[in-house]
Length: 201
Length: 316
Image 1 (cartoon, each protein chain N blue to C red):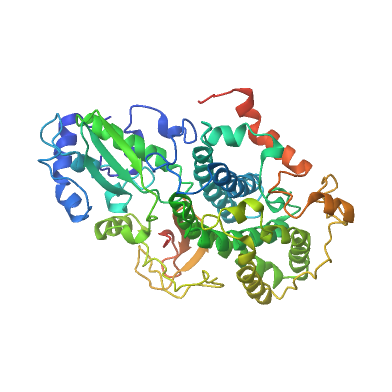
Image 2 (cartoon, each protein chain N blue to C red; image 1 turned 120 degrees about the horizontal axis):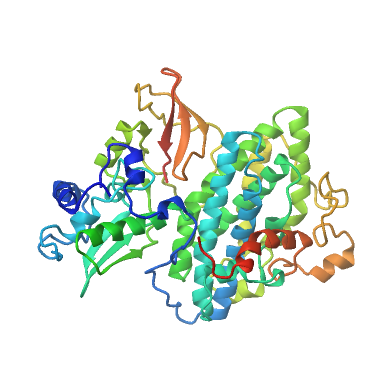
């Protein structure tokens, strides 16, 4: 750990506005959830934890962190998994608990909430901007469908996906599955660079 | 905990947990209410969860066997990703099965410590792939069927099953799209790719009817389970759409090639290769759901369970 507690705390305070801008429904106010450290609320601490596979964005920005609640004698964090088999979920739980412990919240638990299922529509505007800055094209709107069977799409998709490097609007898909469950691999015909795109789900 | 680069993030930890994804798993349903819906028999719900968990678990294992063998790196990643999604679904469903059963078994007990006859997957999940065309045909059939199933299951009266299914719908939509895309490429490709894609379809065709045969447990779980017979129209429509685009023919009923196995299947055991009418009758209409499997399952289980049985409770 390179950041001692003091640094972590100030970094956390800087994230307060981010946590608020996520509109996390049940996030408690700093006053309500003051831990033994006295300054940083549990919600603020949880809002600083980054994704293990996409360390440029926080779990809050990805919409994985759903709620931070003060319970009788501790803190309960609620997360919604992205993909059923995502192996990062274990690391995410551990990272959240570790961050809370370091901030003085010894009695913290992480709860899984499966419904409603995670959707890329929950990735915040700030999260999308950070993904794009890192060269990962953020997802478009998640598919919506009318009642009835899920339609099968054969052939190329219609909505254009822009290149995160040069902004070229028409890019092509190389592979529907990438280095992690949530990304696909594409390439740009203009700048000739491959890039990753977060799949809409 | 905000980092300038990924390497800093990776080294910012005081333990080795992140270098060993895959050990010491926590309960994947941690914090999800475990109560059963009113009027639902726990044993029936457990048996039903096992059915759809085992479909995913066993096919996931078959898909994992393709890793390092796929024709291209992109397909290797696709197959591994699909296997991972199915494994995740299996973990959630096995955990739910253990809760409904109420005997204290967790996902690992159910995956690693059951005998072959206690597995409840359809035979389509366990058969060996002869080649990539066979794999794609099997994946097309499986994903089309499972997507229709999960879509309806997301309205289940069991809130846990409903949530697992709704999540799975998003994943299996991609699986079906992948298999359909390859079916079209191979079918509408060269004479050789077309021939091998058609051979794959012919090989999996005899295993399709089992997918839509209602089991007594499914019939008893009204409002909780899905009647598989109700999935057939959607399945037939999607297969027709894909085969038309691929310029392939649906094998005629009874035209199965199971008495002429392709290369690599010489050791395929009954019931998959069973051809005699009395053998079929003895198997019943839902052999997989009743725990009647071929020798191919023994091969899968010896690989999948060997380490867990050799070192009970072991983690690393």
